[in-house]
Image 1 (cartoon, rainbow, N blue to C red):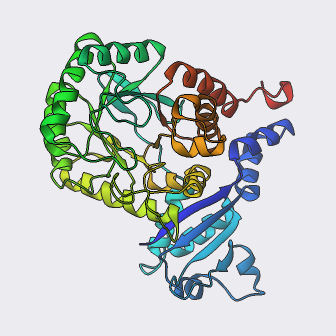
Image 2 (image 1 turned 90 degrees about the horizontal axis):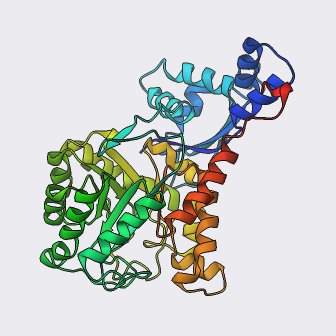
Length: 407
């Protein structure tokens, strides 16, 4: 599959601020932003012939007008190349590639990654989620006896609903209700058992709040009843790879979905997970789920994606995915990420238990907001995460450098 992955890019908004600081005209600022702003883009799944068809010979002045072309050396991955250059150089390459049907696909994926279309807003339960304006909070409502962090804390529907309402008061934008533990080593439960745990909770929240409700399930039968009870989003930890009927249920209800990546099922997923390219394989898996969703009739604007931190991944896999969240933006969908209280945070902080991982969770949440641009973070401690995100989002959007910067 031909794909462009954004490895790094100078932030054009920061460059624009410096050019404003130099008192350059708006026209010159726009021109220089395209000429000076550099990007590095990894192309995978392409053809070795692209270079022959598009790039002039070495030493040619025409070659200097295009991005630097660094081909890969893997014999089993022919056509991989790192492109490095200014936006102006990329624009010239895109224009050349568009001239032939053989290279038009390269033009398309480059355009998508360098000039992504704004993601449409998502409306759930009358609330509008404007992606890119701030990081939204999904509060966790586990109604399971064996979840890794808070299993058994809310043994009945009444206590779970009260907890959910406290999360709303603390600032949760969405509530995620789960009736089946997906912690490493957990076993599946029956449809009837899962429904008995969640339905009254969903109905109770619906009666007392307008907050959007997500239900964390991989079963079509559970999703169907949950959506009837008032849920608005189905959060499938298998990314529509488990139950082939699930996408159709979501589509028929006009609901939204979040597709998560996992390698294996909870019972076995942490038994020596391996990847050749964790980012690329996560993207492939999520694209397959997105295809299932759209084929079933779910509009793309109602699909979120989640890299699945802790689901079939080692500590290093988790850290690398968090560091490279921007690459996942190449999928063109809002990113939901859950790190809250997870075991990799315990390992990083000297073996602390789930209830002792608040500071580590907040560090990961703030880093994701600033560096990776996660759109939604799934957390247990909503009030504390809200404060961390208020700071992180403000830093990311800071523009007040003084009068010479225009404000």
